[in-house]
Image (cartoon, rainbow, N blue to C red):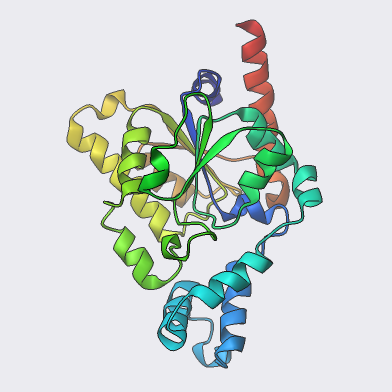
Length: 273
């Protein structure tokens, strides 16, 4: 199953789509940490919700109460930053740089990918909005901040309204993604498949191909999952995605093991070329 993916990466015809799981390998706080911070700041007793509340709804409430998401963004910026020595030692970030994807989409707000590229001496163009698209240069990796960036409060997709508005799938970055994705293989890593926003994106991409009448010509795309889940795999495969896992590997090591094997396979293919 990896052969088509390896070929696409070697030919620079693959896009990486990276989620929070990538940064969590170097200590990024979880969404639960964000929930607890908002609760403390707004003096909310989380026990009254019996766990039935998510960070989207709480961030929406924060914006209503505080009038702006700015202070929360500032807190996240300080606490979501990983020390450079930890990033430089991160095998996952090193492998992402080595694999040399021409385009990386990420739903992470943090600067960890950009910092990793800087530390490994790799050039890139960061794209947060329509204006940045004009800065694209041939041969230079694009890091597309699909849900926004800490440098631009207005770009951040964190509250419930932000997510619902993105469901139109018509923002400049959505249009760019559709254009990029139609001709390339996509590899999704670092995501929980319970993320409805990502599931919606995957479904919309599948529907676009079905509607074109050329779905049989669609480049293969992949989702890497930390654990085998036959239910999720069946649904994702219905949408034209090949599910990859690392059997008998602890979840906290699975992504690194997978990317290591992928990098080695791409290296061997380049040697034979």
